[in-house]
Image (cartoon, rainbow, N blue to C red):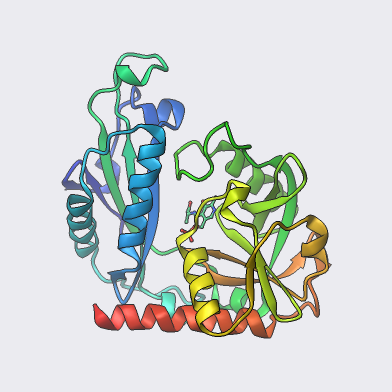
Length: 303
Ligand code: PDD
């Protein structure tokens, strides 16, 4: 497995890629990040990811060490340094074989110990290029299981869930709970009991052909894949609504799916140990995944 790390503009092997124990990303999760994927080794929706990185940093008052144009150049330089995979992952979906994941991390920097952001100097800009870790082909054919977990979503007024920050402990614990129950992904509720999002995904239901997903006002991350799926669905004549969802709406759905950069549109055929709808991958999920795959193919072909 080949991984290349770009540390403040220098390409280094993963074993040499270290940050200070005084880095605030390490100490407090005082950092922002993005995960971008490639198709045919071209970064997909890079502009949207860089835009969100900038907005996340703004929400934290974190001054990014690189402007977007520099980040774009560094991402491309990092990905070009990864040699083609020698052995393709036999279980990967064909369109994911040989593709890469690019994690961009910007920390507020290090400095004297203390919460005060004014103590931060020496911000870090990091790009990690690694083989894409995506669900196997079998997961797209059969769907995956999700679990509504007890860990609650960060309420507005705490760590802003609309910003993609390194403060991810609630998501880690949510996924731990889901995995302990044998589920692929955790779905989180807010303190009022409404569905928000997955630990690292957005969630959608389908009832009688109509798609629904919680609105951004639910305090969720504006997923790049979520936005794209909403746009493609509307353009394709699929009825979509951004409206609150309760656990009962998930349980009664004909179809359920989650979206994220690596997963694309991933069918969910079991929720809390019960079948969703027929228990098989449904036609709306299949159609939306096909629309997303076609959009990715078009962007990859355009280079
Ligand atoms: N996570 N919601 C949360 C909390 C997320 O962390 C993510 C993505 C998403 C989906 O966003 P997008 O479609 O832009 O990938 C929703 C990334 C991929 C991660 O942490 O690995």
